[in-house]
Image (tube, rainbow, N blue to C red; front, top):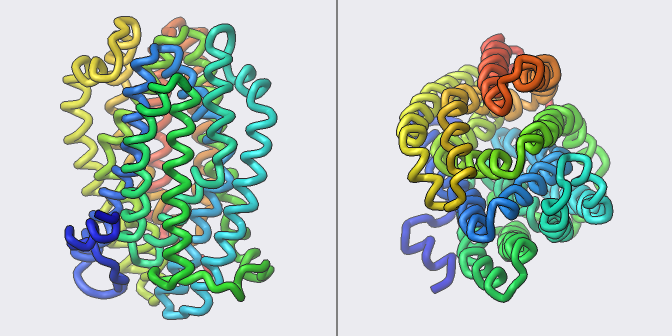
Amino acid sequence: MSIRLLLHRLGLTYRTLDITQGRLCDNIWQLSWPLIISQGLQFFPSLYDAYWLGQLGPYALAAAGLAISLRMTFISVLMALSAASGAVISRYVGAREQDQADLAAAQAVILFVLASGTLGCLGFAFARPLLSLVGAHGELLEPTVAYARVIFAGLIAMEMVPSLGFMLSSAGSPQLSLQMNLLSLTSFLALEPLLIWVGWDVAGAALALVLSNVLGMLDGLYLLATGQAPVRVFPRHLWPHWPMMWRILRIALPGVIQRGMPNLANTILMRFVAMYGPSPLAAFNLFNRVTMLALIPCSGLSGAVPPMVGQNLGAGKPHRAARAVNMIAIAASLISIAIMGPLAFWAGPVLRAFTQDPATIAAGVHAMRALAPSRPFLVLGMVMDGGLTGAGDTLSPMVVNIVVLWLVQLPLVWLLSSPWGWGVDGIWWGLVLSTFVQAALMAGRFWQGQWQKVRI
């Protein structure tokens, strides 16, 4: 049975949502539930990957964690382009300017390919020295380099899938994003154990991720090219249109710094954790993957924020946009509390599903219970960030992230872990405190309401 037929039988057929009128709760739900499933499909491979890497031992888990942190630093440009193109497309869709929305989609695809191709080549070429710099030494270096080089070789596909999915969701069709991710997931489930079984080990796990994303990317491009999405990529738009490119880049440039700062800070953070050995590093990697999947409902809700804000601003309804963001913030924060409590309580059994290494399990239980209180604040900050970005205000989140990461988070992590002698616990508590500060600043900026005056 094809993916499209399966979606049709499940009732997940394509239709463009008009989220500029009607009950807000209904609009939010219509946008959110496909995003929740789609992001679950997108993030589940990370957890599935952790299981198979865990079978290879703590060094494999630690290697993947370091490689992914380096990749995240590189793709800050792509994350910013994705957010900016989504803001532009949603604004044109909301204003019923279809030709401009189509043009923006085509220019975004050109920018994605050029940027991800360039970054992939750089990451592949300089993987070894960069990974040594972020803490991959001794026995950890070779598996980390092997994993990273495969990921960077396939970076175009790895990043086009989430970028195209965000574009489709911003245009009002999250079901198509779900279709892409379902295709990628089903491919990945079959490929990873097969490639590890034939002896490719860590590199096989990375290759499975790349190949499955290639299929998802091709499906997304097909939807855009054949007019099955609310925006269409026409051949006449597939050369640079400088005014539209600049419109996207103007919004994206602050976002590069905004997203680059946490990604770079996370790479530095991984180096701090690596100082305490492979077990805490593997445990931190597991914590991030487990909580990322567990908080998918919150992530799906926050994914509904940019299109709600962008389209309602395009339709001249800023107050409706603000009410939607506040409703989503309350719902997502409460859901995160309900999820993280039981997860912290049963941390041991959860981690034993992925690894049998006693040191990794012990470190993971401690990390999960220490970091659990930070997740509701992380979710709140994510929702408010989405509200500002959806309006095209990428400057405010950039400033907040710079202030928090470089003046609060990293100094706290260093101070608590080294001079104060708390060790790896100091890292965890530094993260909790800085997440609270970030959420407070992001929410305060959104509630000031200046985003309602941003022009695209």
